Length: 205
Image (cartoon, rainbow, N blue to C red):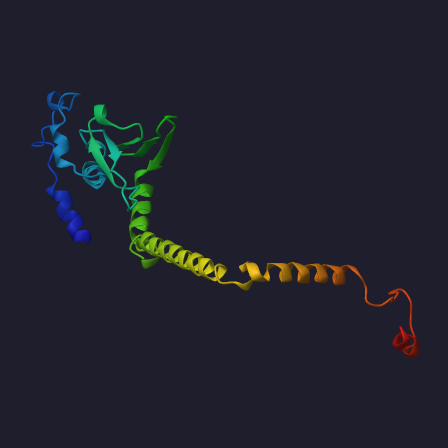
């Protein structure tokens, strides 16, 4: 992997033939053709790794890629400054400045720390727990909804056949309910819970 990275760095355009090497070719608000050489923020980072503080382009403006089902907060695409979104990033040799939408608050992250966090994130999303999290969540929700629908169907079916809902048993059920209420409210024996009874006395009660 280190060899591939070194080959990639050597393949980047040199200041002598890049189109933005001299002062009169420095990019302006109307000349951003050099951005065609930078497809992602990783290309920008590799550019700064190669050229360091001698880089002719001192800063790149980047937008987040459109976020779909898979969340990629470290995937950025370089754009001209006139095309930045409300939320965007500015990458320089020192690090990245995150400009938040609406509030326009900024947050600075050193370049080394950004690369470390990006590597950790890429490793985490390859784990099964995170890689298939959304898929598994959808299946769990689907299974729960199917189970609930089956429960409601069985409940409706049982409710239509229960003895308690048949008209011929309505009067008897009401009478039984009244008797149960009477028994629950009236004691069958006159026992004082605060008194102590001999066995003979308790039998006679």
